[in-house]
Length: 278
Image 1 (cartoon, helix red, strand yellow):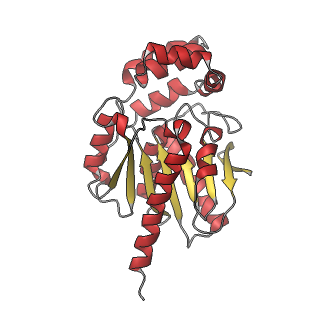
Image 2 (cartoon, helix red, strand yellow):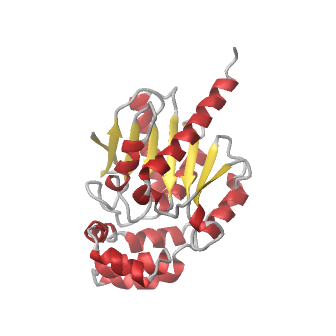
Image 3 (cartoon, rainbow, N blue to C red):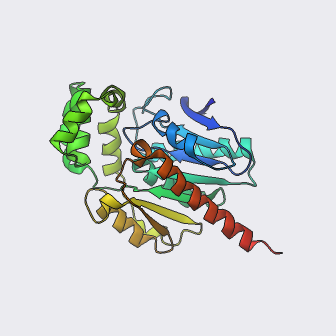
């Protein structure tokens, strides 16, 4: 089911899978939309409703807007949380999941919504200077409206994939899906680079946090080094390394990623049960 939340005149689309219980809200990163995460949603073995935010800049949500920044994304998610708890019940709270760019948005929002966010799961979140070296090339591609070039840059120069991988991707059906998702990319990564983050401020975050890392990225830039920095700043977080995975488990192994999300949510439920007086 597709539903909409509006903030300052900008429509924000969400998909919703029916359920009964505490809702889960998924926040994708760049080069992805709600449709890209549907296989994970389909594989999730959770009782509550599952929402996926189709962030601004990807249809059918609205445009980034003239004054776009990472704060725009945080305020959007804040508004979406208001709507989800209004529909599902404030007493239940919300489990929040964020991937990559969406992981930072989720982390920043959870820190100011600790009475709403019941648990937080972050899959390889990123912070600046992630992607900084590719920004000039991405801006040039955006000015030329060259979406093919932008897809090539983000895969090769940001994510670190080989020329052979990019060539195979270009020949696949996925390329046509990725092209429109590259349209907001330069502005999104610019917003990331302009957003100051004091990771130490999250060290006292008082809610269950699970950090998911693909084993292929452990200790390896551009994702593993950022992950280590964030994990160090969140000493109470549970770190889970996913064997055989990199940064794209939602596309390459949605069932496996759904299993890890489900286990994290189960641990939160078990902790809640243990905390309840008998």
